[in-house]
Image (tube, rainbow, N blue to C red; front, side, top):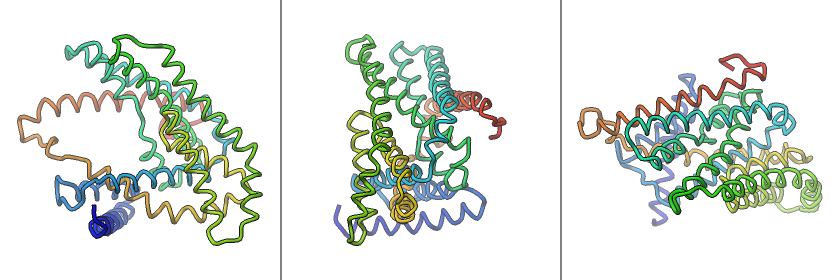
Length: 330
């Protein structure tokens, strides 16, 4: 991709994202809805003005890392711990219920055992980025339900790794290696625990180092290095880099500089984050959703049934949150 093409793509992405985000906000919706719709409009199904190149995808991934880092800075670790059991229950039920519904549906459609397990596992992951951004836009992230959703999403990432281990084992040897499943889950939990505990224990070293720096941008660059380092480490152990970024934010939220870091990170995140959500919209292929094309009917019926199963499963997973003094509407 040449520089001029890259710059033109960014111009189009930012212009459409801003217009659609403003429109969504004026209609009382989250700005992320506007950015997603902007992506759909810019993609091959409508205007075909933007292609999801590797360069743009990486830019978007950096944006989501920064968003989760910012959210970690705004969050309180103690608030997370208070809703820990509720978040764990939501995460477990949010994985088990969609899996069982997807598995049963696949068997009812006469799929093989492996295909049924694959379909079930495919319905279990929870996208961290979209619910977090919506809650953030609505100012609900620091609430009890916000902490439960964020905590459950992080735990869900670990459970998704376990599901992936099961699928890989069945695909390679036809059997499940419970040792590999346990190792994967244990490594993920160990990473999160060590990242947060050791980070908080030695956070004073970060403050001491930054206090000795006098050059422009020293604080934000040091914070970025820490966030990217934990994101890289999370990716290295098989977790989503977003989990590492969130952990970095939770750690630095305990330092004396957290307010200044948050103030400086926000405008940087505002530049990168829209790229991610626009590209999610660009990836949508509306041609497969056209009900007037009879060739799409089997796909639409299967997609509709699986979507119904996934939605019901996720709604059921919210029931444990009622133990955290929430009603059914939050």
